[in-house]
Length: 106
Image (cartoon, rainbow, N blue to C red):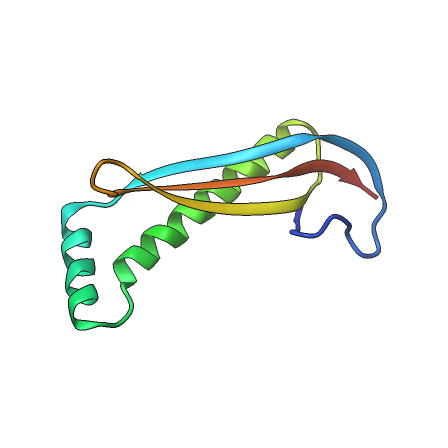
């Protein structure tokens, strides 16, 4: 499966546009990661616990996007966009959404 943020794939011809596909993941951040991130915020530096959560959520959303495209018999997804949102009353939920157009390329 070819995945790209561009609307074309160099050296390939799009022969069929299927439909827009999405991948969504909502992940909760547990107390220990929140606590560790709070310390990082206080003392400065990068929060590896939050970065790990973010990378895992993004990877899962991309896998879901690919799975939905494959279910349509697509072999590529073009124009991929990745969005991040913070949810929950205490901002302790992370939502990652991916979207793109499932296509068939030669």
